[in-house]
Length: 413
Image 1 (cartoon, rainbow, N blue to C red):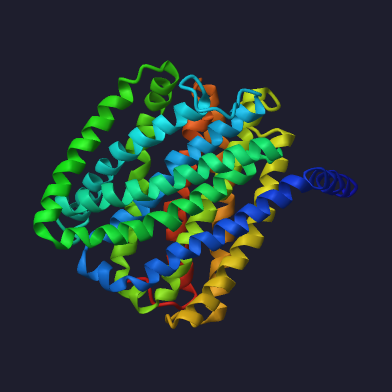
Image 2 (image 1 turned 90 degrees about the vertical axis):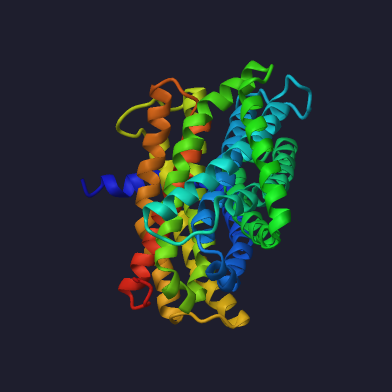
């Protein structure tokens, strides 16, 4: 037994050495995406006045950012699988995978934005929290979401083409970049959209136009003449309807703790990159497992096989490095921009401990989501990645608030 552990450790080390290219690419992508996510964190930390002025906006923010990760994380996973299977072509012909995914991105962006506005309003009422009108939420959700999605779509397509031509592992690169871009673009664009609701006549017109556009997109989603598009939309319908509930719950939790978070806006800085990278780690694992399931490297078993376990070990390595970096960067940015925080020790230590809480959940949920979707004959790319990102949004927010409160930051409400 004593000899078995060194042998396993040596095998694991050999695997890491064999996968050093993936490790390097994934770690670079995670570091870059973390830096991008801090744009969202800094925005969130500096708009506390707007969050107070427009109650209910904080409920919408995690769901809106999470939905970008759901839609475009699934697109990245599908493109990664098509690349591994030799089906990816750098063409925008109507029969190609790029065209199919662009179509899905557009129709699901509009349809889901309307759904998020409704959910945010319902959640505020259910938890007895104040909220702006449903029309304000529709304008902010649809306009802000569409602007953010346009940017992410361009980057996702560019990243897939670059990975195809350079031979990058799209599963290790796309998910962290897309989830980070979801936060980086969505929170600022939602903030920009809040200025529209302050003009009543303009807001009324825009809300009506947004409603029409979203309903039209929902119809077009199921009336597409390409069977592949209809299949993707059909499989993603349940995901789009149900996973935002977790993000809305995360937003409601943050709004319930808003006075404490406003007192320490430095914590608000770290929340977007933390939840983004927690979801990205789950997305990396799910994408890699989905690709392995598709090509037959692993089978959908209850107990993970060796290739799945070593993929999980990559997530642990990535997570420890990234969460320590997030805590340190949040302290530096808070000091640089003059935002209050509970102290370097609590910020760095709390972020790392929160990450150690989140990593096992990421691994377990990510693995069994990929396995269950495969067992039920569904496409893991359309389910496992979107679900794991939403699960980790709620888990990430809850773990940060819990750990920071235990360590002495007064955000327990």
